[in-house]
Image 1: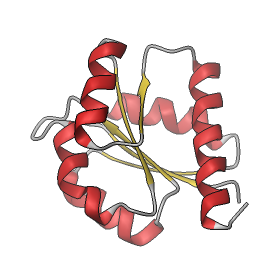
Image 2: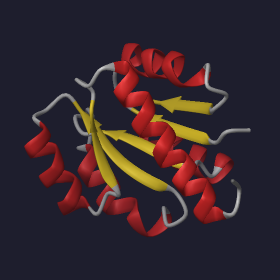
Image 3: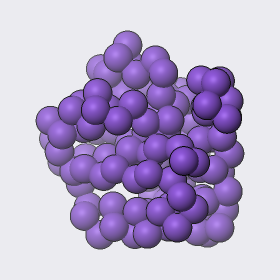
Image 4: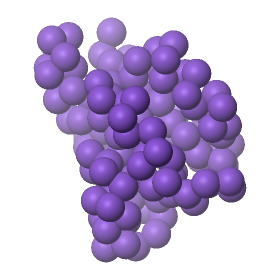
Length: 128
């Protein structure tokens, strides 16, 4: 297995697109648009990487990361969004996320960055 990713986004189309992008690499991909399912999926699958959309319907992604940061110590948590990279970087830092990723990047660039993060986290966890 090459790792596990959890995606939280309120746009089902975005979730399906990212699932398609990552699954062909052998990464297990879990997706949800529900905050209730989000916490359950973390506990169930212990993902290497969690991508959290900034613009969620009920809470902003940075608020989700801030509130859940204490429970997410073994997963890398990254905010992702289509907002400006400068704003995304600031939100990511303020929320205590491990990084940020723009949805506006080319798919190959997104895939390369995500694979790097997953591999890094798996090495730190002793799963490489």
